[in-house]
Amino acid sequence: IIFIMAGQLGASFLGCYGSGVNSTPNLDKLASDGMKFLQNYATSPICAPNRATILTGRSPEIHGITGNNYALQTDSPTYVHVLKTSGYRTGGFGKFHQTPMMWPVPVNLEFLGFDEAVVSEDTKWGPYIDWIRDNHREYLDIAIAMTNGHGGVVGCYPEHEMMQGACEDELNIKKSAFVKHMEPLIKSSLWERMYTSPLPAEMHDTKFITDMGLKFIKKCSEEKTTPFFCHISYNDPHDPYDPPEPYDTCFDISDMPDPVPAEWHQHGPQILESCMDDYLKYCTICDNKDAVKKLRSLYHGSLRFMDDQIGRIIDYVKASGLWQDSVIIFTTDHGDMMGDHGLITKGIKHYDAGIRCPLIVAGGAVTKGETERLTCSLDFFPAFCEWACVNSQNLPPVEGKSFAGACKGMEENDPWEEISVSYGFCDTVITNDRFRLTRFSDSREGQMFNLDDDPGEQHNLYFRPGYKDKKIELMERLIKVRARPRTICQYRNLPVREGRKYLPETGFRSSLPFYNTSGSPWLKNSVKPQWREKDI
Image (cartoon, rainbow, N blue to C red; front, side, top):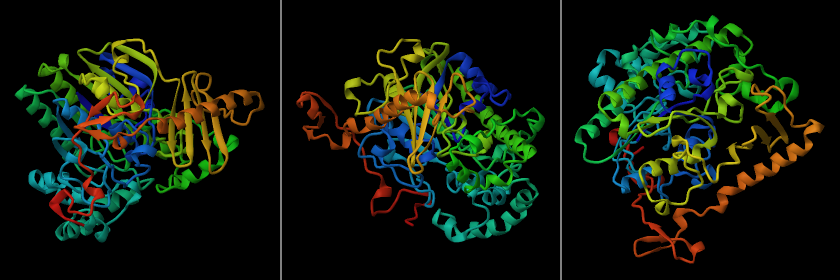
């Protein structure tokens, strides 16, 4: 099982989902070889909460990661724990986002269930910098200059970066390297978040993450002793929008499709006004058509760079004879508005570009085709376990519905009728009859779109009298789906006897394995297993 994830990429930006830009030829080919899910949504359109949802099969209000920079409690097993218990060798490489970014990255992910791991988060401080120092020292100053470029951080912040594990020598390098390599790029750009990377493509963390993942896959495939699960998780094409050469000029701005118009200025909700002036200050270019198209061309350049690296993985799987006995899954943690509706990035912007994620599944046992099946982040846990032949009676309580059967073209007995997307005070229901209703509970504003008739989400029906009955129906369905998580018991609360977890609702006649989990070290007052072994 090879699980590939990208950072901040909506389905609509892939060629096979109709982007109109040739930035994903390898993923497009993977989709043509397997099953493409057309209606897959992020349960929470923010990095850490949605990644935690995929890991646990539970909603944010249950696993507790409701925003970034929290630490996931693992007194309930992740799908990795279950696969490991079932005989899988587990490896994780790249971005995981389950520890605070203001501290050093983990040196291992044993608390999540991974046998092997190399973590490379948005900050880029960590094993990636060590890799540059050890293998490409001539580029060390540039790589250090680019650390902490995510999230609107521009410049050198010694106290902050020392907390992340940087040493004094590295901070001295950054002070001069940022001025030399980054300031000219930022000052000459139409927007400080978009520019050509000063690093060659071969030195980027996207290449590094791919190398680490491939090393694990090759080792496992050559040993041929146990099945393996490999999670390869990229930061790209997440902001800053900075593809290296030649990817920065792959796509001309004149070839970029126009963003979806911003209808909400007229129809509301006005709460979206605050999103234009958020931490990235997108308001400074949102009305500049050339700047927005340049942004989108760089985004597609980063996407093409990542797609080429994914192509290396697919090529190896096919060339090594693994294809027939493997399943490759590609998805993302959430989308990026990329100028659609006059907005950028993620969060409470529950438009298509922000919440609908690609889901492509391919491999020897996967049927070719596409499906309209409603799917969400909760569904990955049971799907992985089904592929690993884990007895369903041994699964810890999860909320999702496996999509493994859909990958064989099978009809489901109990498909989703509605799924939810939630973050903060913004709750959305997506229904199987192709409606989206979003409610902003702190402002009493809302949105309602018929996605079949209005795929561009240009006509907000929320306050239209003729849609009153439909709005009431969708409100009821939103309440139903948002209440569901609390109706499912939590593994951590199941009583234990003689090495088994028991289910009280069955009169204690049914039991589950006692999975060998360890609590997150980031939730204990003890030394952390983190990069360079510092206890900050």
